[in-house]
Amino acid sequence: MFQVGDYIFYPMYGAGHIEAMEEKEFLGEKKWYYQVTIEHPVMEVSFPIHNAESLGIRSIADEEMLESARSVLLEQCSELPSNPTARQQNLLNKLKTGELTMELQVIRDLSHLSSKKTLGWTDKNMLNNARKLVISELITARNISPEEAVLLLDNTLHAVH
Image 1 (tube, helix red, strand yellow):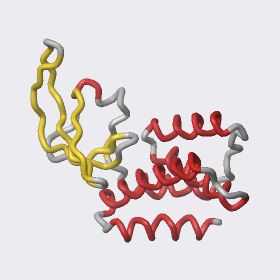
Image 2 (cartoon, helix red, strand yellow; image 1 turned 45 degrees about the vertical axis):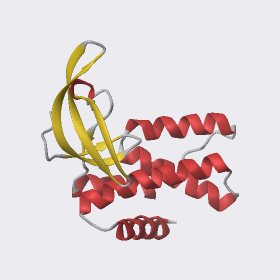
Image 3 (cartoon, helix red, strand yellow; image 1 turned 90 degrees about the horizontal axis):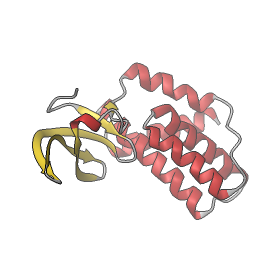
Image 4 (spheres, helix red, strand yellow; image 1 turned 180 degrees about the horizontal axis):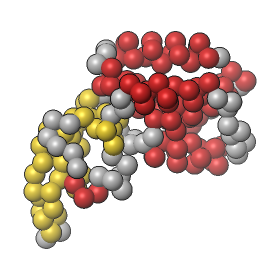
């Protein structure tokens, strides 16, 4: 269980800070909720404490996890479905896991695809969302500025390709 003051990663939203735990009533049922501030972009979210695990909420990556995940960028690209709908579902499922390695796979594979052809709107959007999630975590994990996080990700991508 997380505590007030902990930094967490919320899949599809990014890195955040637990501001409070409070009891709320919803549909006649009282439950305890985490109140979280997502930092980049700034937004407030809350979710039932007992749902944290099923939502994929996890601690922010430590340095060892960051370095281990970085190796995903060195791996051979996955074969993406040629059907745009199937490709989007495949990539979205990876992002929904909230796993840093999966987010980096999406970035790696779409970046590779963009070197072969111009990405369509949905692919560009998916790539941008994956980048935002990774950048959000880098900002928090390494305590760096958004600009430094963007540079770190871009330099790492360029170094391996």
